[in-house]
Amino acid sequence: MASLRDIQKRIDSTSKTKHITKAMEMVSASKMNRAEDNAKSFKPYSQKMEEVVSSIAGNDTDAQHPILEKRDVKRTGYFVITTDRGLAGAYNNNILKKTYETIKNRHQSTDEYTIIVVGRVGYDFFQKRGMPVAKSIIGMSDQPVFNDIKELAAETVQMFIDEEIDELSIYYHRFINAISQKVTTQPLLPLTNLSDTSSQSTSRYEYEPDQGQILEVLLPQYVESLIFGALLDSKASEHAARRTAMRNATDNANEMIDDLTLSYNRARQAAITQEITEIVGGVAALE
Image 1 (cartoon, helix red, strand yellow):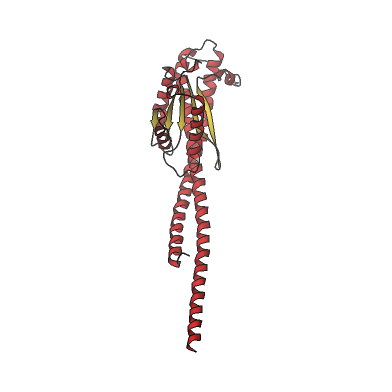
Image 2: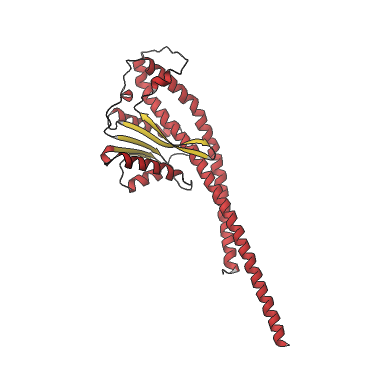
């Protein structure tokens, strides 16, 4: 049995860890609330952008743009959003497992796909397995703005336009609520469902200059906005997952402290009983 001093040291150490995890839980909760507000605030812009783009492309049967062209798939692009740090439970494992299984099931060679990754965890994961990472970004802000992702998003869209990839899907966590985040796969390129979206819109627009020139500008921006929206969702999900992980760690620390305290009291009681027994035995021996 461990000595009283050893048990007390473990209680003190676990208590210090509990204070740290509790503080990290509170910080993550604050970040999550702000990230959730960012994601919700961006949705009206994203929806209006989708409505306008769909209205133009859906109503103009002659609309042409590389982003709208469906072609034979020779190489697939995977845009994967992970975190830069751990301590987020199964957050990174879930998204990386989904991506890895999809790639292994669909492709026989690394020439058939390429990966664009956000986050150090994802970057290290793919690099260690010898999987091709075409572009990456590490050190993303906890509360990202569009300029943080704009260059990477624009380069990714340009890869499709230049036919370096023939289709693009994004893998990320969709934020549902504080305790639920869903691994989501969304096809990004080519854009093939705009006509369906346009039929749901009740607004009508007049354009100046012509629709073709507007599409030339708006379509890449629209895809970039989809990537940014996924990033905002991912950040809210990341903070929520880290908050949950730290809460679980705090609860586990409390349970461990309770168990150690019980062990300490039992050991202390046993030591007192032993001392009493020795005293009684000594008195008996003197009689």
